[in-house]
Image 1 (spheres, rainbow, N blue to C red):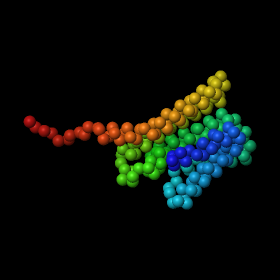
Image 2 (image 1 turned 180 degrees about the vertical axis):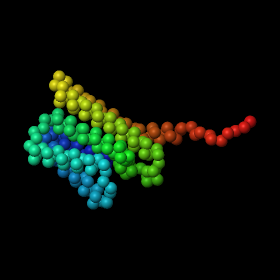
Image 3 (image 1 turned 90 degrees about the horizontal axis):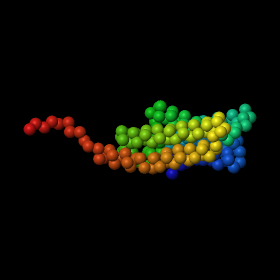
Image 4 (image 1 turned 120 degrees about the vertical axis):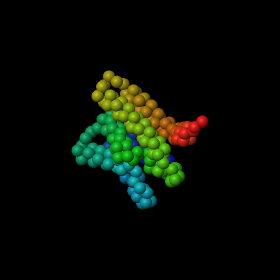
Length: 193
């Protein structure tokens, strides 16, 4: 459930961007991101990389939109936000703290947090999300800069990328644990005979 809350600013942004205005979308997303971060701080929970990145991304975009009077097209602001998501995920990988770790720790017993398997599962899942956001960013860029490409292709690519990442996130941990459990152990002793 908290994983979905991590994406609440992005969901609010996309809904309001389409139904009200881009400015309403970025300001509401900035407020959601800030409230989510404050909620965790007041509960004495560590801030998550996705939360901090969301505050920075939407806060900067909202301020830029309002004070620089940028009139974003829907396509360009989607490209900015999807590219921002990709950067947040890549930074989490670059610093060795895949963004999914914080969410996985809320669902998995602390005894597994330091295991290589737990870390590797989260690194793989984070790479899948990075790939999904890269596909979404590429589709957004194509929709913005290649007008011959119909909008439905951008929408289809986004839905396919998100669907794939969500499905993988739900299924992969169990499959990886099964594979690790069933992996043959190497016998380091030698037998003579």
